Length: 381
View 1 (cartoon, rainbow, N blue to C red):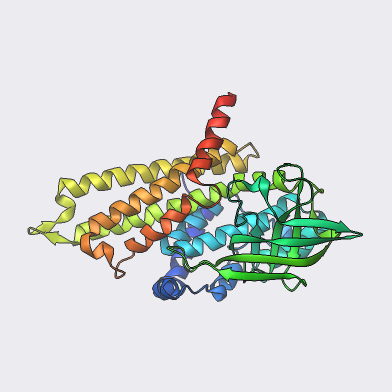
View 2: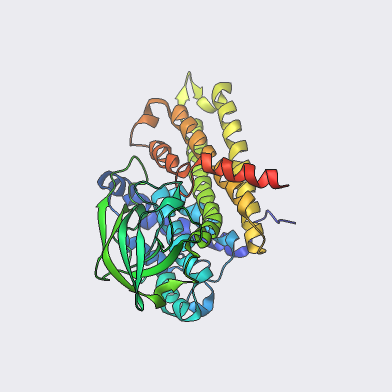
């Protein structure tokens, strides 16, 4: 049975992030958000703390923790700045996670130590301008020429698309629409024909870099293939199963942050000679928010528990991601309402939670895709 009590490692990580964040994140988050600045130097420091390789085994230079510690780390970072939580999650679960799960021993030894310490920042390229949820119709093509593959095409909405030092890229090596017609490649920054493109100007998550990756006759050796030719799409779906737990954790952190800010503000803000928390209109909002956050937490840690035990997480991961992301939006929306006019200003953190939360219902599979996944899994039973 799942133990809901934080273990010693989780407590240690939560305390460490709170102390670190008070000095290194909170004082700068408004500036990063306003300027859409990606604080690469911060992630190097997170690498030194072991947070950029939470799940990587110690033999490859990682922290060797479980999904419980991983969820805790993302949630605690996301309370401070969801952009930081997002970039940390994408680096860990997508690029690093793909190499860890499907790379051969030589690839793991080459890349995982650099990724675990954030000597190298990771990116992961699946989405394209015309293929969001419809990944099977991707247009990025890899053609074999001797021992090499020549990649042409473009990826968009890629976390660390410009700043990433290494990317796992899914390209078509077979027919359009064939789920066994795509292959995963590891492509290093500086490879001729591979470059970052336009950086997106976003509503929220503005301190997390989102950009294009462009391939123009990019020559990649066959030794850079992860797994077998034609397995790329199947691998990606498995990576996204785990990645959805990351987004659930990100959503949970946003919701927790918005709730905590709302509780504190409602006890300090006076109207009609009493704290607004004494008004039923406010206290009932807090009751709903707290209950939603608790339910999102339980779903997220249930999925993490299944992942730790090596069981299938397709259903649990989709449920956690779907529910927690919608809760992040709902709770941050109510937080703005509780703060009233002040909630609409940048003097308080809730407007940022509100803007950042929406991405959680879109990234790594929209809420609609999660419902599709959940319904298919439920109907199998």
